[in-house]
Image 1 (cartoon, rainbow, N blue to C red):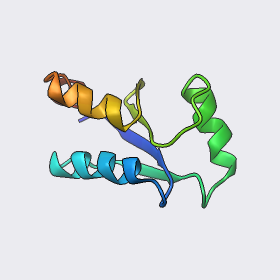
Image 2 (cartoon, helix red, strand yellow; image 1 turned 60 degrees about the vertical axis):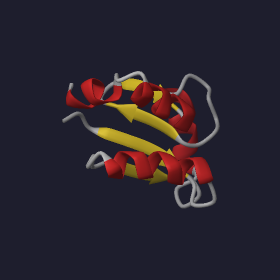
Image 3 (cartoon, rainbow, N blue to C red; image 1 turned 90 degrees about the vertical axis):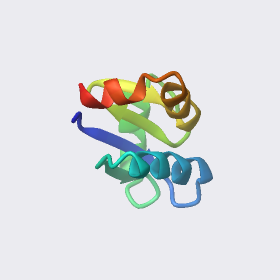
Image 4 (cartoon, rainbow, N blue to C red; image 1 turned 90 degrees about the horizontal axis):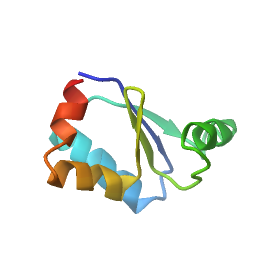
Length: 85
């Protein structure tokens, strides 16, 4: 299973939806709350090629994008393979 990191904010509904999907799949992930750790937001933006909204999701070295991107991968049947590595 690939290492999964997700940059979030507790006020973000899309963050909760993305985490819900990962939890439904039994995926463990490392959550980085950019409100609690504001210095990590610039790290997120560097890794996400300038994207500044949360969530930003990384599976292994792959930048998935946001919640909609995660769900699109799942609908296309590609998320499980990416998670498996």
